[in-house]
Amino acid sequence: MVNRKAAALAAMITPVACVPTALNAKSAETGQKVSDREQPNVIVILADDLGYGDLECYGAKNVATPNVNRLAEQGIKFTNTHAVAATSTPSRYSLLTGEYAWRRPGTDVAPGNAGMIIRPEMYTMADMFRNTGYRTAAIGKWHLGLGDKTGEQDWNSPLPSGLADIGFDYHYIMAATADRVPCVFIEDGKVANYDPEHPIYVDYRRNLPGEPTGKDNPELLFNLRSSHGHDMAIVNGIGRIGYMSGGGKALWKDENIADSITAHAVDFIRSNADQPFFLYFCTNDVHVPRFPHERFRGKNPMGLRGDAIVEFDWSVGEIMRTLDELGIADNTLVILTSDNGPVLDDGYDDQAEELLNGHSPTGPYRGNKYSAFEGGTMVPAIVRWPNKIDGGVESDVLMSHIDWMASLGHLIGAKMPNGAAPDSRNRLGNLLGTDSEDTPWVVELASNHTLSARTKDWKYIEPNDGPAMIQWGPKIETGNNSMPQLYDMTSSKDEQKNVALENPAVVFDMQNILRRVRSHPGNKLP
Ligand code: NG6
Ligand code: CA
Image 1 (tube, helix red, strand yellow):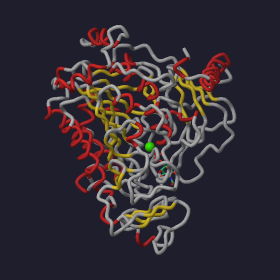
Image 2: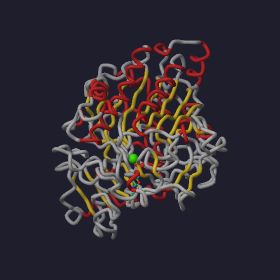
Image 3: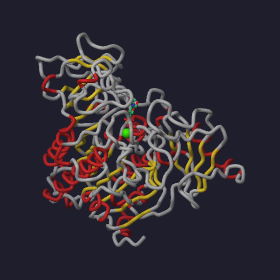
Image 4: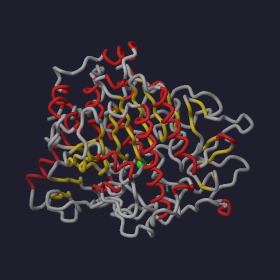
């Protein structure tokens, strides 16, 4: 990889040359212009259920993503980056804490009334940035719980604990997903646009008195029909998971979610342009229910799922345009990725499968969201930082989200408490394109808790006696097999030919990776 800025950058990121922690705080105090600072603003754009093959620059058919294409042209496009888990909550938990979610009970897909899954005493990526002088924000999908205890939140009062306790100066979030109640935004621990005439009650076990449900009143599902599940509360003519009453003018309209969270992200950037900031920007796109604004509709042949990809691209474009307008794009490190692999029918009748028209959401990979196969965790990843990284580069270096916390911490010179980010290894050189040596291994978590080990050359999936297909609705291969599975990733990416029996020594090595990482913090292992 030829990179004219690489040498300068390599010098900057060696431990000796690492910029001292105080610099950021100082730059804020002295009013130094952002473009003069060494340390960049950092924006993580995390898409939801966006597949490796869903962006035009990753070979997507049928859908144009010009803004993401430009980001890739101006940065590095990674072709071998892995989310930690094949569903959202454990993937996000791991990204934000640098700890594998499978070490912690209670990190599976969370209901909208989950208590805080990242506990206040834990040290997060946001704490790391905040303690290093950055202003920090989380905007968009959260899905990691709020308040102290599951089911005990009073949504009509400020929540007793939340994102401010884990490093975020500001937040404007959806508690869980768009398909889970409560269907309101939470801003700094309180329901945004709270409507006192319509107090909010949420229950995940039983319906609230007098409320219609998708199950009993399908005629009220005027915006989207459910294909499986999603038959409890009805909000905006769409069935949800969980029961809810009230909300009034605080209830979101699905078609405006992208506009709303993007506007808040843009505002946050504008009001912090003169000081270092860290923005964790999590889109609702392209998760179900897919119900994008009408201005994104009908311009591609893939129906609502394609429209949601277009809406995602628009959000990315708005962030980029804002950075350009403020003159801070050059010193802002933008990282774009997805929380897990793609899914077509995830519970609503939006014809995602019927309208693919030859598009492959996972690109060449087998399996989908939920799977132990690569389609579950293989994600797009684009990194742009014009001051330090040459654009137009493609990298197949092996990378995992788990390592981003330590890597970014190293970049900003963060001083972390002992035991923080225990599984996160500093791979900053990989992330910034100065080091093309692959990380020795990464670990992937399927929704049924099967672990897989991946090296540059091999993929190993632990034996699992469960069914070959997901049982509750989506037509998805789990990757389960009662035999150990080993795939040679150098010969083909599609995990079709199990070569475990022919390669016992490799199977042994891969099993050893999993055995050792189960009992040791990942960052203590070679
Ligand atoms: C599943 C939901 C699915 C989606 C997923 C979480 C049903 C039938 N399916 O349980 O629609 O919400 O959870 O997705 O309820 S994730 O990307 O947030 O992990
Ligand atoms: Ca997801």
